Image (tube, one colour):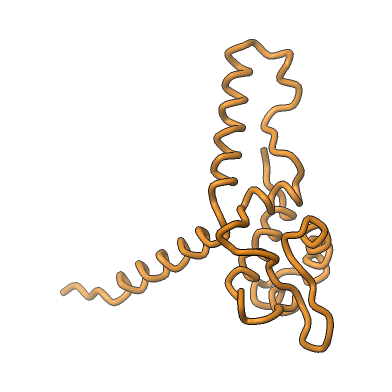
Length: 143
């Protein structure tokens, strides 16, 4: 299984919207500029996310997009499946030997579990923990 830029950038959009929950809509232009991504490409990705009910568009001069739900309830799996389709590691495993079928099934289920048990809030919390750790380490002086 390979996550393409559709899945990666879609997750980037969702994370940016999750960080700004309660602060009003965010434009794709601002996300593209902040993350150095193509605004046009992000526009192509936002449609499926909106159609799936994961994000909501707000019209008007101060419009943009907001996350359509609690970041604790929206998972990485929701985003990846919306943009990448079903999670499969190997196609047509029916012709494989039983042991191989079991391996591919267990691997697929493990990937699904990680994606489905990782919320946007979890990813944001992980980023904050990583930043705090690097800040603490950044101020250490050894003589």
